[in-house]
Image 1 (tube, one colour):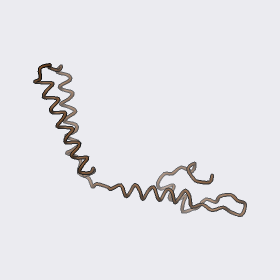
Image 2 (tube, one colour):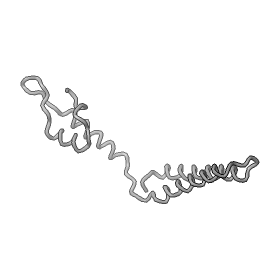
Image 3 (tube, one colour):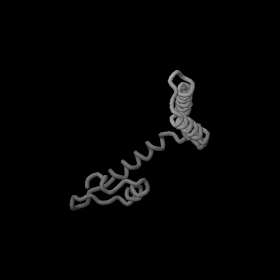
Image 4 (cartoon, helix red, strand yellow):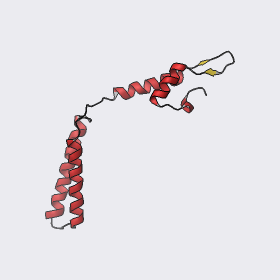
Length: 109
């Protein structure tokens, strides 16, 4: 599953609330227009399809933290040369290129 179990359950709850609204729209004392009912049906079906297709592997947020640490390391591991200017760290450049940190975000520039 691509999402956490709690997110999965929240989506199911949302679908249930929409189905209750649909029932009220169709059979309640104030009937909704056919186009509104059809729209609600399509929305419920689309959400059900999202739930049905949620079959990938869940990736924890630790990966995002790792990327953040790598980007901080890549941006901050520059050294000053004899002239007092910062030199570009080749490893940092590689990491910034891989994770997509623009040169404008480099510290010390």
